[in-house]
Length: 327
Image (tube, rainbow, N blue to C red; front, side, top):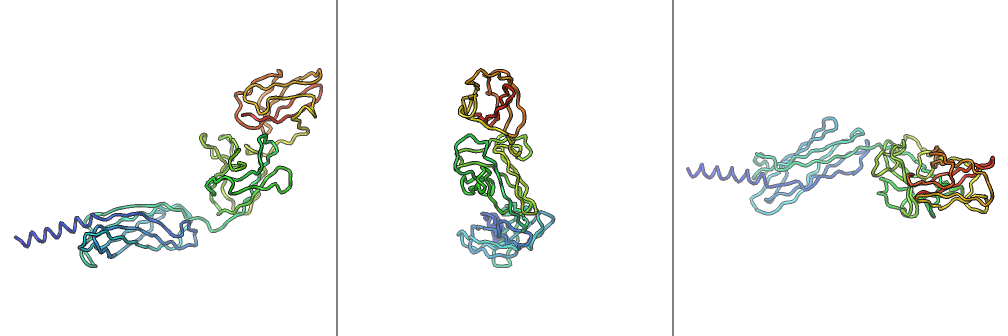
């Protein structure tokens, strides 16, 4: 009878021990593997009893699902035992993978008792990206920006939206600013233009084709092409290039017409120094798309979104164009 009880106690203790371990975390190296890289998986484990030598481990791949496991032998001493298992993966095709690791443990020396229950299960996702890269030149036309600025910058998912980490240059002196960065081919990046460490930033339309379509946080989106690319010089806050204008007037000194206030929040006023016959006022967005026409010289722009607009005033067979900023 005593022998039976002793066997039962040993069995019970082995079960308890087998449940007293846990996975602290899983990581891979390199952290952003390409299709050329062999991958090392690190599984950090803790056990309630010391020592905790490895009995055996296993890894298998089925499509984009990776299953791995390890079995450790827990010693008789009630003391935390920390260890790290390493598993090796040969280079994988491009794609997103899920790795699930199962930890079990038993009692005694190696080879020890099997794990009667699973101790812990944890998982990670990781991407295998292309080893090919492309240079992308980003360009933005700042001619229509009415806010004061010094240096535009490129912010995105690739630099943690850091502010002025990637300043741009006006190499031609025509207010078309640019910068060139290198990316893995096929990556999808999100970005937007700002200036002076987020002092000003673009306001984009989520319905436009170059954006992510998110109405709450609208930014630009780009899939990196398989060759070096120079992007079109888009207008600030636009997916399109800027509308060329034959004449731009913003002050009373070069035009018989005064448009104010600028920036405008609600009502826009148009005054003229001479007895002019103003036929109509045409409002365009910064991409040259017609918003509406007015016959009055005082009207509200309250319903317009924040951004830059063009006011074209037709009078006595002439047309003057003005930039205004809507706040």
